[in-house]
Amino acid sequence: MGDKTENTGATIKISAKSRNKIIIKTSIVGILSNIFLSILKAVSGIVSHSIAIVLDAVNNLSDAASSIITIVGAKLAVRAPDKEHPFGHGRIEYLSAMLISVIVLYAGLTSLVESIKKIIEPVAADYSPAVLIAVSSAVFVKIFLGLYFKKVGKKVRSDSLINSGQDALLDAVIALSTLTAAAVYLIWGVSLEAWLAAAISLIIIRSGVSMLRKTLSRILGESADAALSSAIKETVCSFPDVTGAYDLVLHNYGPDMFTGSIHISIPDTYSAGALDSLIREITAEVYRKHNVYLTAIGIYPVNTRDKDVIGMLDAAERAVYEDPDIHELHGFYVDENKKTIRVDLVVAFTAKDRSKTFDAAVGKIRSLFPDYEITAVMDADYEEE
Image (tube, rainbow, N blue to C red; front, side, top):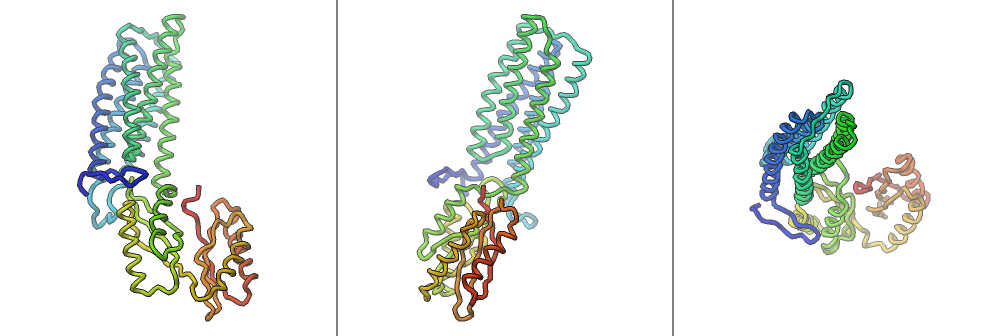
């Protein structure tokens, strides 16, 4: 694949090799920065007797561990496919992102426990100028890291980097809160130290749960990106004689790593040889433009010999589209010799009872064409939002 990038119009696709280098380079910056901040805050927290600063130092150490996990995940994810994993190892990145989420969640829970202990047995903090300067510096470093991680993470579609960036920005808020508590103590003599630490812990826990939920959703399997699906269908329909593209199903094996299947509508006059050639051309073009390998392309033949079918299709569409939960009717084919009609109906996931909605729509088609045997299939819109 080399080390080049490809401009596909709407986005710039980065090669797997380049993407891996970017992730590792960014993560190393995070490791070095967080180790430095962890040492700085640990010393400051111990000197000032500040539980909030000490917990923040521990949090920075966990951030460094997260970056190490990101590097390991990126390294493992680009391993070549093998017998046990024929579609590659890209999903390891999702597992590393999940592990980072768990680390953040654990850090929040342990911080909350320590904060509660300090609320029960408070210890007055001693905020020296050196401590305040150290915490202030951490704010700017964390803001830089957060924005940098999120920018790079979105560019290379890395959940691990995006999660780390979100966590870094959260750390900046924590450091600002610590400075606010210090100001309140120095001006009015009121110690909010332990209570602030507890509040910080709850924010960390909330962030960890949010990141974990998002990552688990990716692992379970989300609907395909609407822009990518539309682009693939547009490419498929650009071929001569392809009048429609339906039932696109994409399987994700890591960021920008997809296999899929699709149905196309073509004239029923196509020979087996011409059909094989068309399918091969479509498969190659979709892979070239979108880096998606279509493992199967199904066929919906379009009636070309009987002009009355157009009127029959219009009547069927008017009937079934009376129900808003029927999103699409396709694959409509009439065989006059066998007196059969084949049709697929896309039923919304939001329908109260999808089976009942489907049966009702099929019943309408049967009532329109009582002399035909109806063979219907219930489809789903996998891009439905």
